[in-house]
Length: 250
Image (cartoon, rainbow, N blue to C red; front, side, top):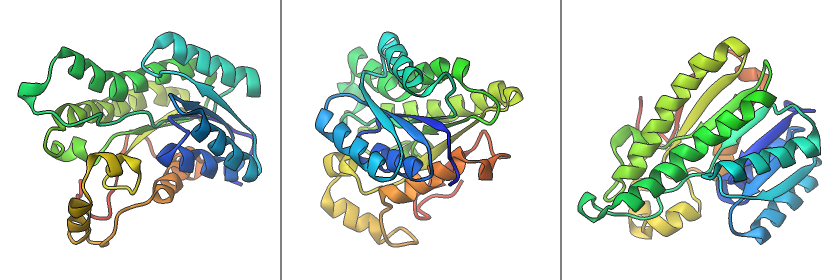
């Protein structure tokens, strides 16, 4: 088991990508602290699957854009599993909706930046006192950060671009402490995100463009997270890894 005895924090861990990641980490031996925002039933289901995978977990409600709630989340994790955190996966983020620039106001700007970038910054800042040599942080950017995003997604793409830059900065800052920081840049992954913010017709059209001729699934992403969290990737840091079926190369 690649992660036996390790403790992992997963923000947005209750559903979709976060659920697949939480369960995959657990299947490799990690104890998992799972954050959710608004749906306790999803969180309970994820916890059940973590336990079925043979590991332990706790679930904690919280808004990862609020410093006090981030602190409470991490406090719960270290109280449950000890004062050392080995893995942080910053999944929280989202497009929230589509608006052209003339429709955007300050509240919209703040929402997109807070959900996608501020949450990543707050959780990274909070984990450092608990993370020792060998620790791994995995952030979530997006293909949108590479190509500017689709119609009405300019601020989402911009925020995910900031996550890419933050990942590189933290890799430099934390590398001397033996902590690795990487990010994923997913393309179209079959989750509720695209059920809400994409159309079936566009998704089918895009499948014909991808070299692999399919969307990704949550397990594709979770497998890559486990690799970056494990010692198998112990000389990889500061990367923003594309996982998009060949749609875009960097």
